[in-house]
Image (cartoon, rainbow, N blue to C red; front, top):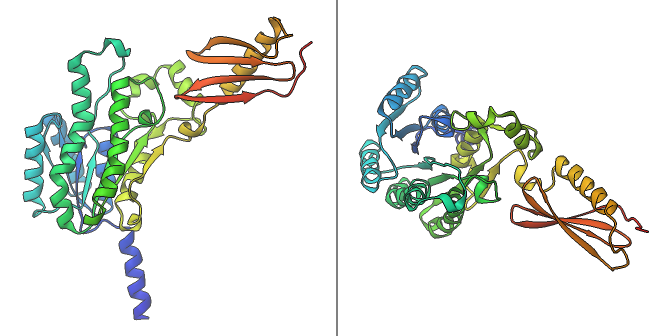
Length: 334
Protein backbone atom coordinates (compact mmCIF):
# COMPACT_ATOMS: atom_id res chain seq x y z
CA UNK A 1 0.00 0.00 0.00
CA UNK A 2 2.82 2.40 0.91
CA UNK A 3 4.48 1.72 -2.44
CA UNK A 4 1.24 2.52 -4.27
CA UNK A 5 0.87 5.81 -2.37
CA UNK A 6 4.47 6.75 -3.15
CA UNK A 7 3.94 5.96 -6.83
CA UNK A 8 0.73 7.99 -6.85
CA UNK A 9 2.60 10.93 -5.33
CA UNK A 10 5.29 10.78 -7.98
CA UNK A 11 2.67 10.76 -10.74
CA UNK A 12 0.90 13.75 -9.19
CA UNK A 13 4.16 15.71 -9.00
CA UNK A 14 4.81 15.06 -12.69
CA UNK A 15 1.72 17.12 -13.52
CA UNK A 16 2.29 19.97 -11.08
CA UNK A 17 4.48 23.06 -10.91
CA UNK A 18 4.11 23.35 -7.17
CA UNK A 19 7.34 24.54 -5.56
CA UNK A 20 8.62 26.06 -8.80
CA UNK A 21 8.98 29.66 -9.90
CA UNK A 22 8.83 31.33 -13.30
CA UNK A 23 9.65 34.53 -15.16
CA UNK A 24 7.30 35.37 -18.04
CA UNK A 25 8.06 38.43 -20.16
CA UNK A 26 5.18 40.43 -21.62
CA UNK A 27 2.62 38.76 -19.38
CA UNK A 28 -0.17 41.33 -19.29
CA UNK A 29 -1.66 40.70 -22.73
CA UNK A 30 -2.57 37.95 -25.14
CA UNK A 31 -0.60 34.73 -25.04
CA UNK A 32 1.69 36.01 -22.27
CA UNK A 33 -1.29 36.73 -20.02
CA UNK A 34 -2.64 33.22 -20.63
CA UNK A 35 0.79 31.71 -19.87
CA UNK A 36 1.00 33.53 -16.53
CA UNK A 37 -2.40 32.21 -15.50
CA UNK A 38 -1.62 28.68 -16.74
CA UNK A 39 1.67 28.41 -14.83
CA UNK A 40 0.29 29.99 -11.67
CA UNK A 41 -2.79 27.78 -11.87
CA UNK A 42 -0.52 24.72 -11.85
CA UNK A 43 1.16 25.93 -8.66
CA UNK A 44 4.13 28.01 -9.82
CA UNK A 45 5.05 31.35 -8.29
CA UNK A 46 5.25 33.70 -11.28
CA UNK A 47 6.94 37.04 -11.90
CA UNK A 48 6.05 38.92 -15.06
CA UNK A 49 6.98 42.23 -16.63
CA UNK A 50 5.33 44.80 -18.85
CA UNK A 51 6.19 48.14 -20.39
CA UNK A 52 2.98 49.69 -19.07
CA UNK A 53 2.69 50.17 -15.30
CA UNK A 54 -1.07 50.80 -15.22
CA UNK A 55 -1.76 47.67 -17.25
CA UNK A 56 0.57 45.64 -15.02
CA UNK A 57 -1.06 46.85 -11.81
CA UNK A 58 -4.52 46.05 -13.16
CA UNK A 59 -3.49 42.49 -13.99
CA UNK A 60 -1.78 42.00 -10.63
CA UNK A 61 -4.99 42.93 -8.83
CA UNK A 62 -6.99 40.51 -10.97
CA UNK A 63 -4.54 37.68 -10.33
CA UNK A 64 -4.55 38.36 -6.62
CA UNK A 65 -8.35 38.15 -6.60
CA UNK A 66 -8.08 34.73 -8.30
CA UNK A 67 -5.68 33.51 -5.64
CA UNK A 68 -2.74 33.27 -8.04
CA UNK A 69 0.75 34.02 -6.77
CA UNK A 70 2.01 36.55 -9.31
CA UNK A 71 4.28 39.55 -8.90
CA UNK A 72 5.40 42.03 -11.54
CA UNK A 73 7.75 44.82 -12.50
CA UNK A 74 7.91 47.43 -15.23
CA UNK A 75 10.40 46.50 -17.95
CA UNK A 76 10.87 47.17 -21.64
CA UNK A 77 12.84 44.13 -22.76
CA UNK A 78 14.11 45.91 -25.86
CA UNK A 79 16.55 47.79 -23.60
CA UNK A 80 19.58 45.93 -22.30
CA UNK A 81 19.83 47.66 -18.91
CA UNK A 82 16.15 46.95 -18.20
CA UNK A 83 16.67 43.26 -18.96
CA UNK A 84 19.55 43.19 -16.51
CA UNK A 85 17.41 44.92 -13.90
CA UNK A 86 14.49 42.46 -14.16
CA UNK A 87 16.86 39.50 -13.71
CA UNK A 88 18.28 41.18 -10.60
CA UNK A 89 14.75 41.59 -9.26
CA UNK A 90 13.85 37.97 -9.98
CA UNK A 91 17.11 36.66 -8.51
CA UNK A 92 16.42 38.48 -5.25
CA UNK A 93 12.76 37.43 -5.25
CA UNK A 94 13.45 33.73 -5.89
CA UNK A 95 16.64 33.36 -3.83
CA UNK A 96 19.04 33.09 -6.74
CA UNK A 97 17.28 30.47 -8.81
CA UNK A 98 14.68 30.24 -11.59
CA UNK A 99 12.94 27.07 -12.67
CA UNK A 100 11.15 28.47 -15.73
CA UNK A 101 11.85 31.28 -18.19
CA UNK A 102 9.22 32.06 -20.82
CA UNK A 103 10.50 34.52 -23.42
CA UNK A 104 7.19 35.83 -24.70
CA UNK A 105 7.53 39.58 -25.33
CA UNK A 106 7.54 40.56 -28.99
CA UNK A 107 6.31 43.05 -31.57
CA UNK A 108 5.35 43.02 -35.23
CA UNK A 109 4.22 45.42 -37.92
CA UNK A 110 3.75 44.50 -41.54
CA UNK A 111 4.95 46.31 -44.63
CA UNK A 112 6.91 45.48 -47.79
CA UNK A 113 10.55 44.61 -47.15
CA UNK A 114 11.91 47.62 -49.06
CA UNK A 115 9.93 50.01 -46.81
CA UNK A 116 11.46 49.00 -43.45
CA UNK A 117 13.82 51.58 -42.01
CA UNK A 118 17.03 50.62 -40.22
CA UNK A 119 15.43 51.75 -36.95
CA UNK A 120 12.33 49.60 -37.49
CA UNK A 121 14.43 46.57 -38.33
CA UNK A 122 16.57 47.08 -35.24
CA UNK A 123 13.50 47.50 -33.01
CA UNK A 124 11.93 44.25 -34.20
CA UNK A 125 15.14 42.25 -33.90
CA UNK A 126 16.10 43.68 -30.50
CA UNK A 127 12.62 43.08 -29.04
CA UNK A 128 11.93 39.67 -30.56
CA UNK A 129 15.34 38.02 -30.71
CA UNK A 130 18.06 39.94 -28.90
CA UNK A 131 15.97 40.31 -25.74
CA UNK A 132 15.21 36.59 -25.57
CA UNK A 133 18.83 35.69 -26.28
CA UNK A 134 20.17 38.09 -23.65
CA UNK A 135 17.60 37.14 -21.00
CA UNK A 136 18.51 33.49 -21.51
CA UNK A 137 22.18 34.35 -21.00
CA UNK A 138 21.39 36.30 -17.83
CA UNK A 139 19.07 33.61 -16.50
CA UNK A 140 21.43 30.71 -17.21
CA UNK A 141 23.15 30.62 -13.78
CA UNK A 142 19.76 30.92 -12.03
CA UNK A 143 18.28 28.13 -14.15
CA UNK A 144 21.33 25.95 -13.54
CA UNK A 145 21.12 26.51 -9.79
CA UNK A 146 17.51 25.32 -9.78
CA UNK A 147 18.69 21.85 -10.78
CA UNK A 148 16.04 21.47 -13.50
CA UNK A 149 15.54 24.56 -15.64
CA UNK A 150 13.19 25.05 -18.56
CA UNK A 151 13.19 27.81 -21.18
CA UNK A 152 10.24 28.22 -23.52
CA UNK A 153 10.47 30.69 -26.40
CA UNK A 154 7.26 31.99 -27.95
CA UNK A 155 8.07 31.84 -31.63
CA UNK A 156 5.68 31.85 -34.61
CA UNK A 157 4.87 29.78 -37.65
CA UNK A 158 6.16 32.86 -39.51
CA UNK A 159 9.61 31.48 -38.64
CA UNK A 160 8.72 28.18 -40.33
CA UNK A 161 6.72 29.14 -43.43
CA UNK A 162 6.10 32.40 -45.28
CA UNK A 163 3.00 34.23 -44.03
CA UNK A 164 3.45 37.74 -45.34
CA UNK A 165 3.78 39.05 -41.77
CA UNK A 166 6.87 41.10 -42.56
CA UNK A 167 10.34 39.75 -43.30
CA UNK A 168 12.10 41.16 -40.18
CA UNK A 169 9.48 39.56 -37.91
CA UNK A 170 9.79 36.23 -39.72
CA UNK A 171 13.59 36.42 -39.52
CA UNK A 172 13.48 37.14 -35.79
CA UNK A 173 11.26 34.10 -35.19
CA UNK A 174 13.40 31.86 -37.39
CA UNK A 175 16.38 32.94 -35.27
CA UNK A 176 14.42 32.01 -32.14
CA UNK A 177 13.78 28.56 -33.59
CA UNK A 178 17.48 28.01 -34.22
CA UNK A 179 18.70 29.24 -30.85
CA UNK A 180 16.17 26.88 -29.26
CA UNK A 181 18.04 23.96 -30.83
CA UNK A 182 21.50 25.31 -30.05
CA UNK A 183 20.80 25.96 -26.38
CA UNK A 184 19.09 22.57 -25.99
CA UNK A 185 22.37 20.89 -26.94
CA UNK A 186 24.74 23.32 -25.24
CA UNK A 187 22.91 23.57 -21.90
CA UNK A 188 21.70 19.98 -21.55
CA UNK A 189 24.73 19.30 -19.34
CA UNK A 190 23.34 21.91 -16.93
CA UNK A 191 19.95 20.15 -16.90
CA UNK A 192 18.32 23.06 -18.72
CA UNK A 193 15.77 22.21 -21.39
CA UNK A 194 14.83 24.66 -24.17
CA UNK A 195 11.82 24.46 -26.46
CA UNK A 196 9.83 26.84 -28.64
CA UNK A 197 6.11 27.14 -29.26
CA UNK A 198 5.14 28.55 -32.65
CA UNK A 199 1.54 29.81 -32.84
CA UNK A 200 -0.51 30.70 -35.93
CA UNK A 201 -3.13 33.48 -35.78
CA UNK A 202 -4.47 33.41 -32.21
CA UNK A 203 -7.42 35.43 -30.93
CA UNK A 204 -5.93 38.16 -28.76
CA UNK A 205 -6.31 41.93 -28.59
CA UNK A 206 -3.14 42.17 -30.68
CA UNK A 207 -4.77 40.64 -33.79
CA UNK A 208 -8.50 41.10 -33.17
CA UNK A 209 -8.53 44.05 -35.58
CA UNK A 210 -7.13 41.80 -38.34
CA UNK A 211 -9.53 38.94 -37.68
CA UNK A 212 -12.44 41.42 -37.74
CA UNK A 213 -11.83 41.71 -41.50
CA UNK A 214 -14.02 38.94 -42.95
CA UNK A 215 -11.91 38.42 -46.05
CA UNK A 216 -8.77 38.17 -43.94
CA UNK A 217 -10.45 35.74 -41.54
CA UNK A 218 -11.72 33.63 -44.45
CA UNK A 219 -8.18 33.38 -45.78
CA UNK A 220 -6.90 32.26 -42.38
CA UNK A 221 -9.64 29.64 -42.13
CA UNK A 222 -9.02 28.39 -45.67
CA UNK A 223 -5.38 27.65 -44.76
CA UNK A 224 -6.21 25.97 -41.45
CA UNK A 225 -7.46 22.36 -41.41
CA UNK A 226 -9.22 22.94 -38.06
CA UNK A 227 -11.06 25.83 -39.77
CA UNK A 228 -10.58 28.54 -37.11
CA UNK A 229 -7.94 30.73 -35.45
CA UNK A 230 -6.42 29.55 -32.18
CA UNK A 231 -7.17 30.68 -28.65
CA UNK A 232 -4.50 31.97 -26.25
CA UNK A 233 -5.27 29.16 -23.80
CA UNK A 234 -4.52 26.59 -26.50
CA UNK A 235 -1.00 27.99 -26.73
CA UNK A 236 -0.43 28.48 -23.00
CA UNK A 237 -1.41 24.88 -22.27
CA UNK A 238 1.49 23.63 -24.40
CA UNK A 239 3.88 26.11 -22.80
CA UNK A 240 2.86 24.83 -19.37
CA UNK A 241 3.23 21.20 -20.43
CA UNK A 242 6.78 21.82 -21.63
CA UNK A 243 7.62 23.19 -18.17
CA UNK A 244 6.18 20.20 -16.29
CA UNK A 245 8.33 17.36 -14.90
CA UNK A 246 6.24 15.12 -17.19
CA UNK A 247 8.03 16.74 -20.17
CA UNK A 248 11.52 16.14 -18.77
CA UNK A 249 12.77 14.33 -21.90
CA UNK A 250 11.58 16.97 -24.37
CA UNK A 251 14.15 19.54 -25.45
CA UNK A 252 15.24 21.33 -28.63
CA UNK A 253 11.78 21.17 -30.18
CA UNK A 254 9.90 23.83 -32.13
CA UNK A 255 6.22 22.89 -31.88
CA UNK A 256 3.63 24.60 -34.06
CA UNK A 257 0.26 25.37 -32.49
CA UNK A 258 -1.53 26.20 -35.71
CA UNK A 259 -4.53 23.97 -36.31
CA UNK A 260 -2.50 22.10 -38.92
CA UNK A 261 -1.74 25.16 -41.07
CA UNK A 262 2.01 24.56 -41.41
CA UNK A 263 1.50 21.05 -42.80
CA UNK A 264 -1.43 21.99 -45.03
CA UNK A 265 0.49 22.79 -48.20
CA UNK A 266 -2.57 22.75 -50.46
CA UNK A 267 -5.89 23.87 -49.01
CA UNK A 268 -9.25 23.00 -50.56
CA UNK A 269 -9.41 26.51 -51.97
CA UNK A 270 -6.02 26.07 -53.65
CA UNK A 271 -6.95 22.70 -55.12
CA UNK A 272 -10.11 24.15 -56.64
CA UNK A 273 -8.15 27.12 -57.92
CA UNK A 274 -5.55 24.84 -59.49
CA UNK A 275 -8.26 22.86 -61.23
CA UNK A 276 -9.56 26.13 -62.64
CA UNK A 277 -6.05 26.97 -63.85
CA UNK A 278 -5.79 23.60 -65.56
CA UNK A 279 -9.08 24.15 -67.37
CA UNK A 280 -8.04 27.65 -68.37
CA UNK A 281 -4.68 26.52 -69.64
CA UNK A 282 -5.98 23.57 -71.60
CA UNK A 283 -8.72 25.71 -73.07
CA UNK A 284 -6.14 28.17 -74.37
CA UNK A 285 -4.84 25.60 -76.80
CA UNK A 286 -1.28 26.18 -77.93
CA UNK A 287 1.30 24.10 -79.66
CA UNK A 288 0.34 20.73 -78.22
CA UNK A 289 2.76 18.96 -80.55
CA UNK A 290 5.50 20.04 -78.16
CA UNK A 291 6.41 17.48 -75.51
CA UNK A 292 5.60 19.93 -72.77
CA UNK A 293 3.97 23.35 -72.60
CA UNK A 294 4.49 25.76 -69.71
CA UNK A 295 2.55 28.80 -68.63
CA UNK A 296 3.07 30.95 -65.56
CA UNK A 297 0.16 32.73 -63.93
CA UNK A 298 -0.39 34.68 -60.73
CA UNK A 299 -2.85 32.98 -58.39
CA UNK A 300 -3.79 34.91 -55.21
CA UNK A 301 -0.36 36.51 -55.15
CA UNK A 302 1.50 33.21 -55.51
CA UNK A 303 3.50 32.02 -58.49
CA UNK A 304 1.89 29.06 -60.18
CA UNK A 305 3.48 27.23 -63.09
CA UNK A 306 1.18 25.02 -65.11
CA UNK A 307 2.78 22.21 -67.06
CA UNK A 308 0.78 20.35 -69.71
CA UNK A 309 1.88 17.36 -71.71
CA UNK A 310 0.01 15.18 -74.18
CA UNK A 311 -0.84 12.77 -71.38
CA UNK A 312 -1.19 14.81 -68.19
CA UNK A 313 -1.28 18.25 -66.65
CA UNK A 314 0.37 19.45 -63.45
CA UNK A 315 0.91 22.63 -61.51
CA UNK A 316 3.89 23.76 -59.49
CA UNK A 317 2.93 26.26 -56.81
CA UNK A 318 5.44 28.28 -54.83
CA UNK A 319 4.08 27.94 -51.30
CA UNK A 320 6.05 28.93 -48.21
CA UNK A 321 9.33 28.67 -50.07
CA UNK A 322 8.58 25.11 -51.21
CA UNK A 323 7.81 23.84 -54.69
CA UNK A 324 4.75 21.62 -54.54
CA UNK A 325 3.62 19.59 -57.54
CA UNK A 326 -0.05 18.71 -57.86
CA UNK A 327 -1.10 16.37 -60.69
CA UNK A 328 -4.47 16.16 -62.30
CA UNK A 329 -5.87 12.87 -63.47
CA UNK A 330 -4.09 11.71 -66.65
CA UNK A 331 -5.68 13.27 -69.70
CA UNK A 332 -5.07 13.36 -73.42
CA UNK A 333 -4.95 16.67 -75.24
CA UNK A 334 -5.90 16.45 -78.90
